[in-house]
Image (cartoon, rainbow, N blue to C red; front, side):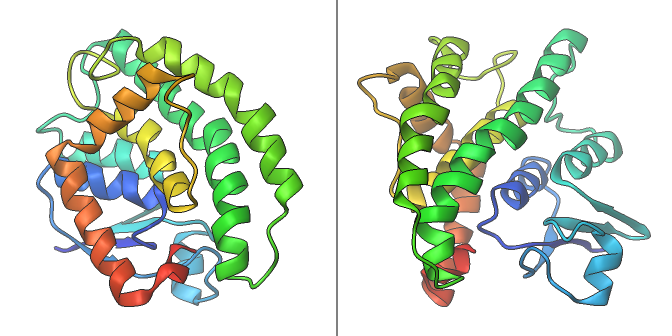
Length: 222
């Protein structure tokens, strides 16, 4: 049976699923779908119209966190979530924090305004909103992450895990919109993000994204 992931390869949420699959050595077919696609089959899989959606045989799921949790339970080796219950709980918190508050600033804020609106929707960027997000909304989050990261190479348990990709994935999209944290103000965070990007599984996924962008053009990031 073929695992299918329905979503755009440049979506930070779909990226989290692709990295989980790559980590576990599970091949998949990527079905290119944008958020809120009106295809009836996609709507049945993802009633809220969000990507990614997912099919594994008779199992259909939506929401990246649900999909990754399913993959960890269904295909437990190699583990991508910490096995220690305390570390696992922290990983789930970090994943939830990154998927919500952090993405509100990086994806639904900076990336939406600087890239998706002008390239996909042909709308002007709201520069005032971008300034407020960069100067006021994101800095407290970066302060939190700076302290959380410290001198660590990985966030939890000394191993690359769901926590690491959950944090990194939104920053990858922010870089597409020409935004990066200031290394002078958040040196530990910037060091950590650069280090995690060099993980072999991350590099493989980013190579696929680069090929996709080259073929489809920058507007594919929507």
